[in-house]
Image (cartoon, rainbow, N blue to C red; front, side, top):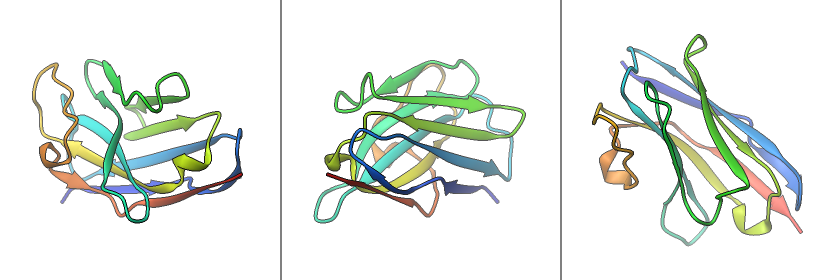
Length: 126
């Protein structure tokens, strides 16, 4: 079965950087969209970024544009989220998700994703 396992979270000071990884297994992810979402305490889950595994096109939430970069390594079946210039408001549990093939389209709603990881905590101190 499909498994998504996140890693790389931790505690970092404001202005610092972290790189999250999402190791995907259980099938071939050609044409899947791979997304990152986050959920802060008391808030709803929100979209962060996504990439189409085959086409490589990406989409970012306005709040992270210019600071975060999503990428994938097909040889390792891993998706990354490079996070720079971190702010306290980036504190959340970050989840990796996979959406079944939908062409060039990059889904941004959680309901459009079919598989989810268990999440990794990111805490940014001020």
